[in-house]
Amino acid sequence: MSGPVILCCGEAVLDLVPAVLDDNGQGFRPVAGGAALNTAMALARQGVSAGFVGALSTDPAGERLAQAMAAAQVDLSHASRFDRPCPLALAQPVGTGTRFDLYDIGTAGALYAPADLPERLPKSTLALVFGGISLIAPPAAEAFEDFARREAANRLIWLDLNIRPGLVRDADDYRARLKRMVALADVVKVSDEDLDWLGPDALDELRATAPMLLHTRGAAGAICWRGREVFVMPAPKVAKIVDTVGAGDIFAAGTLAHLARAGHLAKPLTPPEEALRHAVAHGLAAASLSVQRPGADAPTWKETEECAH
Image 1 (cartoon, helix red, strand yellow):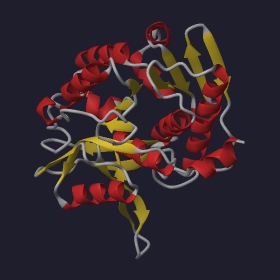
Image 2 (cartoon, one colour; image 1 turned 180 degrees about the vertical axis):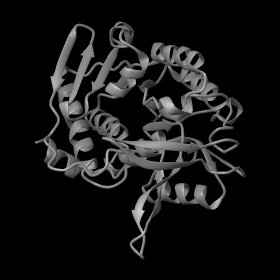
Image 3 (cartoon, one colour; image 1 turned 90 degrees about the horizontal axis):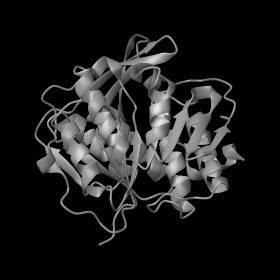
Image 4 (spheres, rainbow, N blue to C red; image 1 turned 90 degrees about the vertical axis):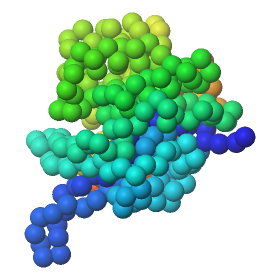
């Protein structure tokens, strides 16, 4: 049985982003969003076979998300369809970032449960990506933790913490789950914002636990730790930042795509340092291109390679 090389596990959300209406008034434009959806679509743009594991509503908003992924050639054979509302996120610019107000009570995503997980995965699937709001609260968080634990022995686990503090209701439960997920992961990606929420000792703890740690620092690039190896990669200069939404997801997709296309994605993850540097540089180039466009608009492989070199 053939199938996607990388499965992105988590949420699909309809984002409502600020837009100018026909009468020049201020309104909102619906766009596909959510960490798992963004990463899967970005991988597909990079020419890597990707699939989505999670819930999709059968309402018009959910159909829009399904159509967007299908149009991007994301495999939906492991997605679950439910007659429940689609999660909605209202985006508003705040300072240098974006605030998301999530409407998720009783939605398809919030009620995704361990029983909804795919029973079997194709041998072609080498890696699973986790992170985002899907890890915050049960039953969905329990489902994805169970899935990671079930598959960790045979498939690469990439964990992007992607913490959204405003959505966390039980911080102790969430911290405990993230700690367990880190212990399962082959690669952990953490941002400055994630570290701010986790606390002053978090970076040292992650470095001691994760086989590979990627610390993204926005315009300052990224730091990679792998055992005793450490290197810093600069980000390409960006003339004007239009929208940072999804930049972390697109960095992850760009890095994973480069590893996959170079044949370095199999578990255990042991690419030579030069190959790893190229992969991280590719991820940073993908993210730098995306922030110059509105929405989580991922670049193609060709666009990213031109930027990286």
